[in-house]
Amino acid sequence: MQRRTVPLSDLAHHIGETYFESPWMSIDEPHLSQFAYATYLDPAFTDLTASKNNPLGATLVDGFLLMSMLTAFHFNNSPVAGDGLYGFNYGMDRVRFTHPVFVGEKIRCVATLAEVEARADGTYLVKTDNTIEIEGKDKPAMVARWISLFATRDPGAPAKA
Image (tube, rainbow, N blue to C red):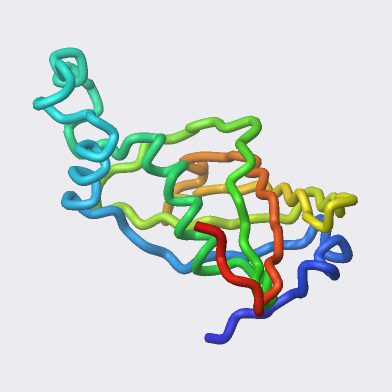
């Protein structure tokens, strides 16, 4: 399925619309383990005695893993297109983890375009409201407003080191 593309300069015309709806995917045990290692939640770095008492079990997916997955969801599904375009992570607002997710459950991201601010320096501040849904559940796993700063680079100009 081909995704729609929207030039950055036209994005403000789509406020309130669905920005994208990702395909369903599941988080597997190797990715959960790699996330734990990458964030130093590994017995080599952290005393995990407290988390061994987790009443939900070892296959609980960390909320920060869900939040970090917004990067992949947006990279793979964002409709914004343009030569030399890059989105910087500017921050998050109102992040809430509202329902547990377990290894093997399918999730997807539904993002809505909330705000677009064209700035004097040629960049755009873009805010999306993101909902991580769990297949078969009425309540989402996470809701968050993500702020991105989009900038373009002249395609002929060399990248800065």
